[in-house]
Length: 126
Image (cartoon, rainbow, N blue to C red; front, side, top):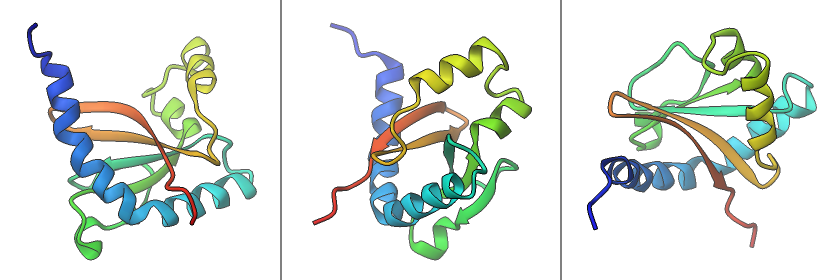
């Protein structure tokens, strides 16, 4: 069986993403709640990027929280405006695939080697 380069890239990124996600999960959950409570969007997206990007609003500066990734708060509406999600059928498909925002964070990972949506479950409260 051959190693799939795409899976290798995913694995490489998911390790650091999940570590940083765990550190920022409470903040992301609060931001998701605020975005939805203020009716800004029903579909918040958190952009994870190692370098600053012009997408969304900076929520977490990675180095300030000893994280590898910066986190920006965005939404499907911004992604559609910027044509990262195509209007019409593309947006409808995205909304249909979007997981429950009370349980999952929608991440958009931005890196020269890897750019993809990832849904991660929030840690359970103990």
